[in-house]
Length: 203
Length: 135
Image 1 (tube, rainbow over the protein chains, first blue to last red):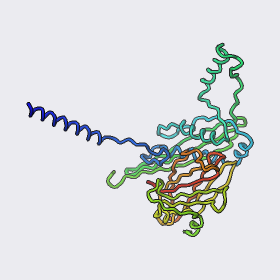
Image 2 (cartoon, helix red, strand yellow; image 1 turned 90 degrees about the horizontal axis):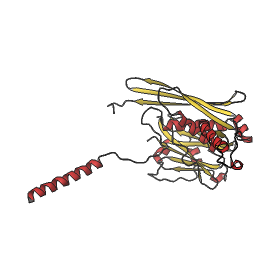
Image 3 (cartoon, rainbow over the protein chains, first blue to last red; image 1 turned 90 degrees about the vertical axis):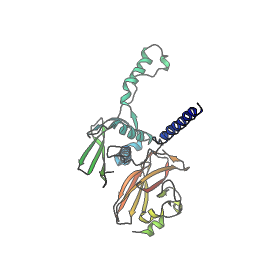
Image 4 (cartoon, chains in turn blue, orange; image 1 turned 180 degrees about the horizontal axis):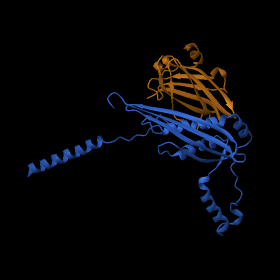
């Protein structure tokens, strides 16, 4: 009986040790630097997004005709979509979000958010038509300011592969159109080339 | 190339092995006292022998500080580097902290490359650039 108890105890101890060690061998989670250069694969990544947004914002803010306009007032813009012409699934709204946030925080531009038009309309209708809101305190309809400029662009890529290497070329183009005249006021491109080569042992 | 010029930029040189950036750090204060206008900190002397900052200049465009730093590769081999600009206001508070990530740049052998950036807003008076080898 005493021997059996001893064996059970040993098995239990070994099991606990095995589970503990298995736990130690598991994945380790840690926080990294969101601004670090990411080279996990040649697919579109955070460094590409950051570089594209930085280049476009810097270019737009220092383009002489735009500097002249923003020196006098803060023009209102709206951001149209970035057309994804690559073969990858890329959240291009994330690029426009970064670009518009930085332009807004520069204090040089103001934006209207076209993705929230339905929600704004619903709220304004509630305030003016539901009878629930004091008319004197309600936000009036028909007083919004229209956008003067439209920001839009394209993201394209050329991918070339061989048995031991892959080359990806991204080209991001942005344009700023004056909505009244239809004239393009600014445009710029950011090119990124990423290459991957198989190492000697395929590691 | 021209190490004398780099030495001219060198106001203070500190060696801090194992520092977070493990590279070269240079600060430009164009609107400050010219005597303290530039400040270079070398965290990695071995890298500083190969890659040098040969020029730093800036201007104000539309109220925003625009900075340009020229890096020179003193070796004949290509170097994969990374750089990051950061921005500070007149009270030396960092402006839009972390808004700019590290950017990759290739320095070809015995060649120069210009790194350019524009301050995120008009409150910036000082910029800093960190340069390190690709990890």
